[in-house]
Amino acid sequence: MDERMETMDDYKAELEASFRKLNEGDIVTASVIAVSEEEATLDLKYFAPGIIKAEDLSDDPDYSIMENLHPGDEIQATVLRMDDGKGNILLSKKEANQMLSWDKLKEAEKNETILSVRVKEAVPAGVIAYAEGLRGFIPVSHLSLDYVEDTSAWIGKDLEVRVITIDKEKDKLVLSAKSVLREREEEARNHRISMLVPGTVVEGTVESLTNYGAFVNLGEGLTGMVHVSQICQRRISKPSEVLKVGQKVRAKLLNTNNNRIALSMRVLEEEMQPADTEDSKLTKEYSSHESATTSLGDILAKLKL
Image 1: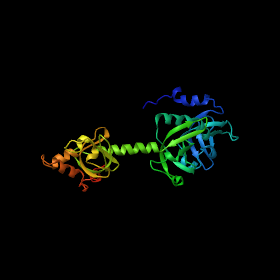
Image 2: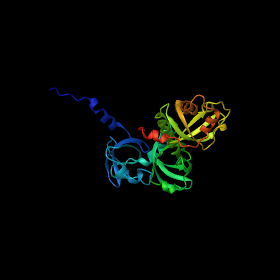
Image 3: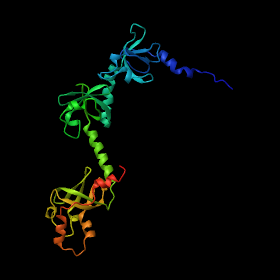
Image 4: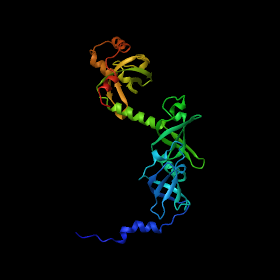
C-alpha cells in the first residue's frame, strides 16, 4: 500500500497559528479542553493555552462553570493579559459577551428571533432574565397574555421571548414573552380551525351583534360569524330582530377560508324544516334557548390535534 507523502498543506493550520499574533483586547474563538471549579482551560491553537477564571465567564448570577461549560465547547473570549504570571493567556468570556452579545441581540430584534431565557429575579414592574449573558428586563405587561399580579411567582420559569427594545449606549435590553405567546396562541387557533369540516353542525352562544351579522362563541377559543343573510329564511334588516347576545344557537359550518369561520343558521333551518314553514315558526325557532346536541369541544375531542 502506498504511503501518502505529507505536504506543507498538512501543517497549514499549525503554521498559521504559529505566525499569528495576539494582542490584549482581541476577541478569540477557542475550544474548552478542561474545566474546574475555579477556571476553564482553552485551546487557542497558539503557543500558550488560554485561561478563563470562573468569575470572568458570565454576568448571570446563576451561571455554573461546572454545569454550563464542558470540554469540547467552543466559545469566544477577550484577551485580558498575554501572560497571567504562569505562562498562560488570561481571557474573559464576560467581556467578550459585552462586546458581541449586543450585536447578536440587535440581529435577533431585527429578525424577530425567539430566545429561551430563565427568569432570575422580580423587580418593580417586571422581572429580570439574561439573554446572551446580558441582563434583560421583561415588563409585567409582557410576561403573559393574562393579567399578572405577583411577579415573584415567575422566578425560575423558562420563557420564550423576543427582543423589543435594545440600546447598547444606555445598557438597555427589554424582552417580551407576550408576543411569542400570542403567536403560539394564533398557531394553535389556526390548527383547531383547520380540523373543522365544512357541513358540520355546531352549537355556540351569541357574543355580539353588528348590522352585518352575529358573532358566535363556539368554545375552544374560536368564534364564528353568521352573516345577516344566513341567519334565517325570511329577510331581516339586522340580526337583533331575531337574535340577542347570550342566546344559544345552532349553525352549519360553511367554510374556514382565511382561518375565518363562516356559519349559516339559515341552511340548517332549511334542512330541518319544511319549505312552507311560517315566519312565526322561524322566529320562534331562533329565539329558542334549547341546548344543541353538538359542541365544538365534542368535535375537536374526536380529532388528533
